[in-house]
Length: 182
Length: 191
Image 1 (cartoon, helix red, strand yellow):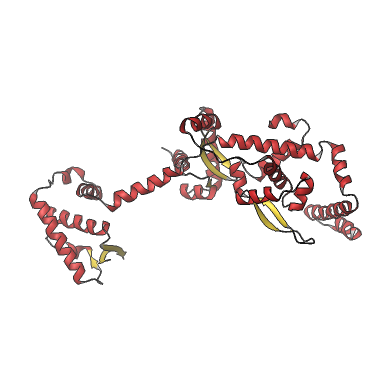
Image 2 (cartoon, chains in turn purple, cyan; image 1 turned 180 degrees about the vertical axis):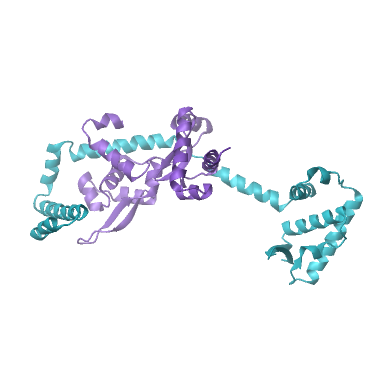
């Protein structure tokens, strides 16, 4: 087995045992390779899983890497194993989260204004779930808190990184983009 | 204030500086517009393309569909790592004589030769006897670090050496003694 194959296998093994997304640095340390080389190996692994139509996939979320069961198979497994999934976010919370991801850093007042409704409960819920965080306060009367999304937001929604989020925002803002994202 | 910012834009020496100054200027203009127009700003957006309501609705739909999709993405169970960790601990905390022998074989790397040694009464007696002697030695000298060679009390015969080694391993695994390395020498002391 050559060095590259060994590194790929080692990374695959690490992702197999890790219940959480693994930071790239940790993977690079494990494989004792540069982060760039590690990323290349991970991308190759990910492609390999896709090519062979595996029920597993290797993906990047929030800049970290993880091995998961693909949604199609996950759906069937969930039924069979009776896996309980935590209740999803309400429409109001999703709206609030969408605005935070779009406008961050943003105050609750600004969110309320855009939504035309009070977002106190949604903001509290999102803070409790660790999807948004307070990142400072606006230099304005009352010094309102500023909110932004957390790394957990990227993991929970399977978003690769900030760049990915910006791409999604562009899709959403492009006329006709609704079909692409549905 | 706006004049100062405009001058800054003109005077900027690099592209990055100029972009920064331009952003400041745009921010200032936006701020002034917000103060004066407020709602009209949103109306302008509607004329350009999607209304802010549509825009928000689409992004919310997108997050909702991603949330639904992610609910079916199953990560490895956290129990997997835990079970691996606990399995290792179980194996190391209570090793039996056979496990110790296997470890010793691995240590020697000469499986065939060591396998020839049978666990007879004599060998078991030897282990019991060395176990008592070594425990006594450590309890009488609780603060002393013993070099490994001093612990081989029964001479250099193969059975005696293996019996001593097994007793040492046993005491280490049971945390009755600790070991450390000092300039390449392995030392043992009562815990």
